[in-house]
Amino acid sequence: MSVAFDAVRKVLADGVGAAYPGAVACVVQGGVTRFHEAVGARRILPERVPNDVETRYDLASLTKPVVATLAAEAVASGRLSLDDRVADGLPGCHPTWIGVTLGHLLGHTSGLPAFYDFSATTPAEVRRSVLATPLTAPPGEAAVYSDLGYMALGFWLEALHGRPLDALVAEALAPLFPLGLRYVPPPSPLHAPTELCARRGLVDGVVHDPNAWALGGVAGHAGLFGSAADVARWAAWLLGQWRARSPLGQVLERFWYSPSRAGATTTWRLGWDTVSPGASSAGRHFSARAVGHLGFTGTSVWLEPDEQLAVVLLSNRVHPTVEAAPAIKSLRPRFHDAAREALGLASALDASA
Image (cartoon, rainbow, N blue to C red; front, side, top):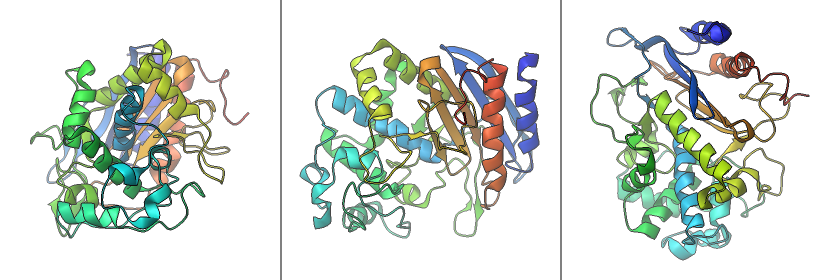
């Protein structure tokens, strides 16, 4: 057990009972796992179960960059272009969608609203309702983080390939086999439950997001489950593709570093977020070239491509109840600072400098 990571362990331990019941962190650099440990409890209801590194979490919006990987592969193969219009490949779109492109969906600049709760309807009705939603702004005018945009992206990819989204994700991740990232996982004691709610009881091994749940657990914006090691291995694979300048890696370069398609300034790129000036969940030491994503259930991943570094933090902060998240918001930057400092990477890269 490396003492270099003692500060990381302390930050993670400080979060138990404050930011989450438990968490698992995994740090991979150059394809080598440098840190992989668990703290706290996997669950506290109906009984307390100690956590371990095999715990499988509801990844929530970490699903979005995985689905964006499918879009990147479609662009790399020539099946899609970032300028392709959604309405041309997805029948049933509202007339206001006429100018919405793949690039707009990926970068949250489509003009679609952030969220509607469609959970009281059937999967077919959810699909129709999403596609019938009018834009609230012209495409490209502003960046609004939109679950609906990624739901539409999932529908479009299914239409393009003629296959369900869960099968497409499994195929895309096949080079990493065996990998535990998957939709609708089979029952397992390794799952970290999320909310205890009046309508659904204890949400355990089933997606927490209401719209993904209404779609049967498979959606473009949420639904994937996995362990911290699963997420880290996927992230390291992306970093390797980027470093090797493979066809996928060249598209990832565009996704990560192309200017925003929004008229207003935004940290969002295509499928990923970047470091926010001044205060970021990535902390002080990730550079402006870093990309990452958060998930509502208490999950995150940050990549520093030039360092071939991936830092993953998974938790079920919404177990047993969904509350405001100031504790995890303050913990995330501390965790990322400590992780980079443990690797000796603090002084070279400081986003606040």
